[in-house]
Image (cartoon, rainbow, N blue to C red; front, side, top):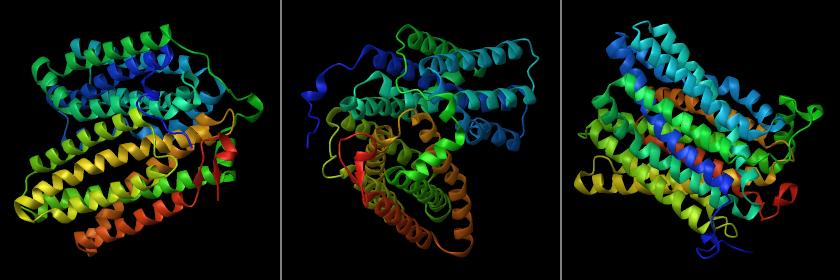
Length: 413
């Protein structure tokens, strides 16, 4: 079986993909500004209460579950490039309205909350269309490398973004930070529009229903495995992260700053993992990408169990979080490539929408499960449940055998 090597992977990816990556780099960095700026704007300029700030922070994520299925249908039915750059332009308009209203002293909390909801809706449309657009811009053998490069761009933004965003918001104020984000979306949209590429394998109206996407996943063994393992994995991960936060804050002498450094280490790991996947691609024959799922959870559990073990335990915590970030990035890139390879013709947008609906829908459930577990058990017991869920998720995924062929030939039971 062929494997991507550094030499084979040194060829430049097509111009349409490079434009997509430049757009994503700028807009993703700008998005980190808004994540910091909107809560600060609400608290400082509008006098919002802590509960209102919490609601505002979640407002951008609520539309994901509602909008994503419809976004998947659009991504299959329409040309995807216009959906992407119009999503960028729409978010720029929303943010510029916030800036104008704030400058005129007309902005209130309700308007800001509505703006956050709109941003979430257009982000859901963009993210779903993006996942379906990547195969339009590169050849099949370049998918893993392309997905890895996009993942690396996002990992850098998510790792450095909050800190840089905090500095910019502190230096320029939240309103100007929001304006900068609007400019980043305008740039991203313009870059995509100039180098857009027509979509391949678009659906016809006869088979473009949202229900058809769920039916396609239900009828495909590899897609069922990917969705089931992704949902279980995210559930386990959210339980582990919630338990980790509580264990650090309440059961050890470490500060929240220590936990922040841990997540920064995970961010650095995710950059390393994504870059390694983009450069080498590989591991397909040995299915090392499947086992990365288990490694990521093992590292997260190791981080939890290392707490309270003194200086060596603190060092082990940081190393474990670094490994966790690298492994999860490696897995995510390959899992996305698998969905792109095995999705039926003209259904990639809806398949990705189904995956995101189930996989992301378990995240709030995981937080609730962690809260319930910690009412009745200790953190180590909760971690044991996480380990069981992780093993089950990995077993579900590993039961399929991957080859490099497209569609239904890609897996055998």
